[in-house]
Image (cartoon, rainbow, N blue to C red; front, top):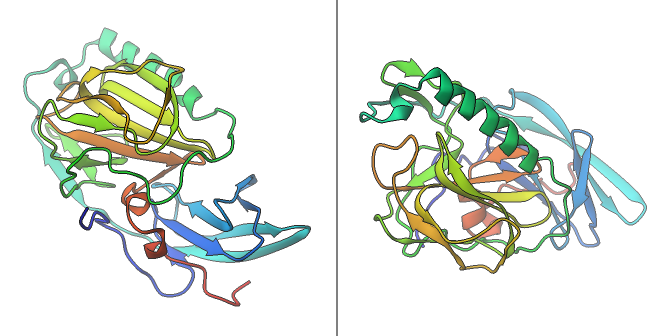
Length: 267
């Protein structure tokens, strides 16, 4: 599949960056915890996703082995993903009307409820499958975008893959469709709940081929690549939210052994 981990750094010690993931793997591990949240381990490994806008500093992570609770601290290093200036074509998203902005706010609130779903058991293994085949090199995770001279309020939370228009968009793991609709900025959009708080996002589609509530298997065609919403041309936006953290999805598309690990004896 080729190297996809753009912007991912391997840091010394128990360190990661905003938008990163760190793992802690020990036999008999059953649950994991961070920031007052706990979740099931994947196999006997805890994965700790760190949100893209997490401030630099130390965070405490927890793992459970039977009745035993173990903790350690992880340093989140400051990281600059860079800035990208974009000139939009003559589309409504380039000069939204008051009605467009009201629509976008309603959609933001609607989508936020998707991320507050209860977390069921994991229905995936790592690495995830590719969201398109073949999958070209992607870019732009974490960048601060400036559209027609105006900074976007949030950094870019996914990877943009230059997949040809009309190409099938594929589910990266088994799951349930929790969103399948046209959104103002994201365009034709699909979101899949894969359990364990892992939600995959596919934006700017030309066509959606699934419905909310539908069960899908890994490799299922969700729709076709397009350029709907705030897009300058055909491509696939692919994003991941894990335990409500916006992370670089490249971490989950590669061998999980490449994810930085907690050093032995550090707890």
